[in-house]
Length: 361
Ligand code: UDP
Image (cartoon, rainbow, N blue to C red; front, side):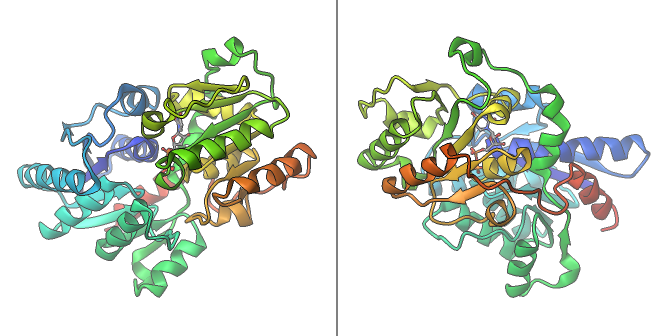
């Protein structure tokens, strides 16, 4: 069995790491499985890409397609053209895609058109919000895939409703949590922790990068002002996504308790999250990590494709209206945030289960 693994953007690297390691483990046990790792180049800054390969011990990609930048369509087209050449030169039994970024969708289309089977890891999740580019990526990928590996019973149900037969759906858990479990003993205190004199459970971590929150100056300014003004003077550490940085510096926001830092490596970022009072975010993956670490999470979105982080975990959707921020923070500071539990099969062994199943295909 030969598998081509696709990774293109930050959350992909975190999901692909345990799959590479599970394949390497199977190889060491003498199993017949080889892989080729293709980086599409969708994220290319050192702190959005290379850092994760180094920190998470992901081997250098066998190919880098260098398809960074551009609009949604330009990037999709560039990845499709480059990946068609790559896959024609290096045929495989199976293309494995993870998550919901542009590379996930673009490489799935190319693979199917070259009659190659597609496996989607983190299949079936839906926000039902087609204004999110990620939702379109998920829907297209799940239309084309041959095998579906899922993180939740809700995802299984979504796939069944879409007519996917039961034998192609495999409920295996969450590869992102494999990475968390494998690395939590080696989280690294970032320099900013001591520089900012942070104290355990006495600061907030914030991340914002969704177009709905960051593409409009007034909206972003309002959101950030509401957050900085309602955290009882505690420091807020804001590792700023490149997309947000492009607009943020012109907003004229100055708050003594707001500390903007570059995007952090995985080990540093999750150290900060683990010791924070809470996280304010619009990320998807971070709501899963806070659920597993039991850290309160306030999500500035109207919907989520990961409902179990709310129904089981510590996540609460408060929408994107800035007026909802103060009431949520009052509950947090009153010590009344829900405690949460860990969703089924988010146990650190998902990638091994995936490789075991793929070896039978
Ligand atoms: N992350 C990181 N450094 C940061 C911010 C996030 O390592 O400064 C990690 C985080 O732990 C999670 C992933 O990046 O594993 C989430 O990526 P992102 O929020 O970009 O994507 P989403 O999950 O929303 O698709």
